[in-house]
Length: 163
Image (cartoon, rainbow, N blue to C red; front, side):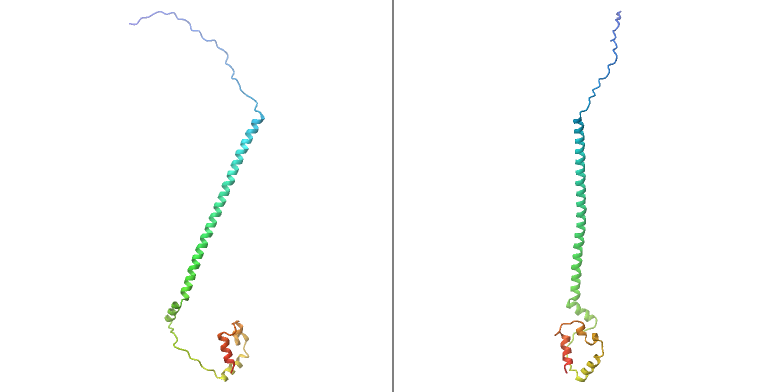
């Protein structure tokens, strides 16, 4: 059921071959102003980068100094707490109740009274004569210790020496 027709073949015309066209080169000489602009932009970018690096370095330095300051502040706070704790312990150790308890544990008891005795004049003379040959540091400890005049020891010596 197919029909066949005889058709005359017409030769196709082939397009004429033209030599390949050389690609057009669009090369132009770059003017000096463009080079100057590029170098200016590059210099600007390097400057911005350097400034950012300096700012970052400065921030790092400030952070490092802040850490050191925080450490010193913490050490100072701990030292103050330790000092306050030691002061509290010292106050507790010097408290009369604590001292009284320690004395009781050592077997000491509170005195019930006091009694004064008169020293005979001949004993005072013997003591004064014996201390005359002694070293002045041992013979007169009150003046070597620079105790204020009129104190308990000076008034006692004055009453003993005065027979």
